[in-house]
View (cartoon, rainbow, N blue to C red):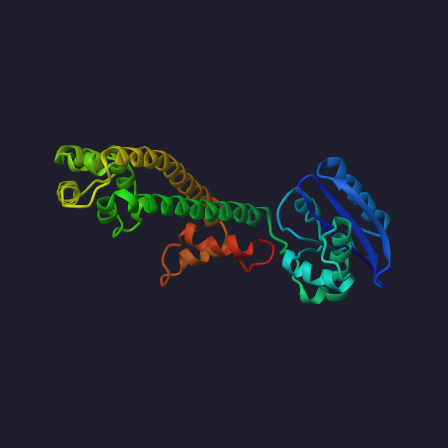
Length: 308
């Protein structure tokens, strides 16, 4: 008898349904998201014919988490079904579109029963490949968060500080640059920026890590900050300055997180067959982990080599 398992995933508990090839419901239960719940699930699967040689395939609406990690420890095929796709299948089983966790587990099991060929199981990645997936996704999320905060800073500067936008927006990295963040923290208002001396600007540039061209850049920034612009009232400008300082703290944290994760993904990525072949290619040159690891962040598997 062929058996299919569907699991409706949640944060604290999961609903499980097992069906046979005819669609008959064989078992349903709810398990907790802990070791006891995982043992209960594995025992239920074993009671319905699950074995190392013939594991029961599982459909679930996520590709992450400890439950998925437990299910992927052996040769079991685990299918991560997109929740939008599962919602379309739900219409087959009832006219009501109301969500039901036990019902959704049954829907997921029936997706495998009727349309397993149309869905792709999670790849049998090695521990190294799974670790790279975690780091690459985390780094991608950090980059997105950094850009969201930078967009908030830019919107705020449009309200009262056009000189800052003119000073940094045309440069690579824009407001996320270290020198932009250091100088804006030193002079969070146009009035304070206009009073900055060349020595103060040079010092800020050096603190940001800039090594060359500090004199030229300091002169450029001084000219930008001392040009004529429209101004808010002094009290309003100071209020915007306090808001900018708060946002800069968030931007500093997100920039540091993105940089740390980009560095963390480098060692495991460079040990993969894909990275070694990239680095060995004279046409491509050295492989950059933060750039190349995006395939893991989006698909979860970047190397076509079996048994990575």
